[in-house]
Image 1 (cartoon, rainbow, N blue to C red):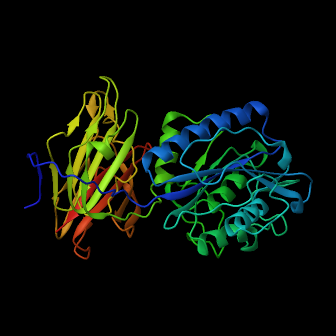
Image 2 (cartoon, rainbow, N blue to C red):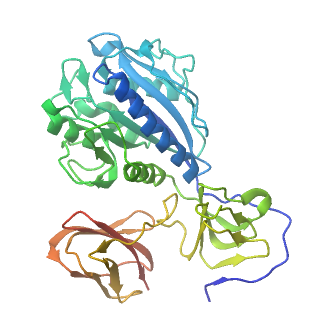
Image 3 (cartoon, rainbow, N blue to C red):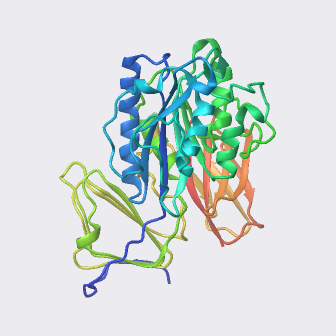
Length: 431
């Protein structure tokens, strides 16, 4: 029987690192003249906060910073500056005038491809000219820009072929997605004069997932589906990201990592204590045995999330200190919780807690999804291996019935969006 056991076992003398595989994340920053020095400072502060959380969410993640611009008004003048090779430390960086203040994102991406392939290019103007990937890591590119779709010397698409809805306009993005397996997460502050077109083009650059459901420029070769939503896009009006936006962006970046679980995982205090302010997810397809500590100082602390297919054993020495948080789940690996923030406090409406409920759960035939105070507008159900079982906008309702007869046995993530934009998540078990 699957259980979480609070039992005492003798201390084993070895440890096994069992984190999920990580991601190589390129933070790709716009250095164009439309961004003032004060706005650049705000963007830098926001990006540094996301970087730190990306490193914290998975110890296998590596980051690099690439700034792009152009020293002329033609796309061939596009340049990039690579701050560091991939690293697990947030680097200190400043605005790089050497790349210029033009804005040709599509062409700059081609230079990033040269750096990843080790191909010399004089338009890579930094001392660091190559980006060596970590074997087995996913590739994520996080673009922060205020680029217009195409206007003057400001382009988010291919300057040489910028017609709306054409494959050529997004050629480099398509190649990165299909050949390199890259995922794009985008934050855009579009100019007022072309806000709709810029956001739609940025959404076409962004990979599928996330919460953006606005207009997406449709082009036939889009690997994520022409014009489909949702997308990993944050459409903003300024360069300051709120804590909620930082957390959402971090979650999107961290969710890309391919999960690879150990069969059995042993966590000891020597290797696996979780520090204050750190979140760590440990997973195993069979069992986890833990004698580590999750540190706290009374008001805040680390977050430990343990997932195992059969047993989680808390041995002598395990301690979740005051202020820390510990959660244990008996679930299949991979699971939806990898690299995610701990669940937020329940939403309340006039003092009444809003919550999602599924009945019956587990189920082998059908399940009713219900909210106790808000009307549902959209429902998605995704398997733990990423298969989309349901993605549907529904007529406003407090409950909705879903047939699960054809679902394979296992765990599924149910996401409900309400008419007023609130998002609720729960787990469905098909037996």
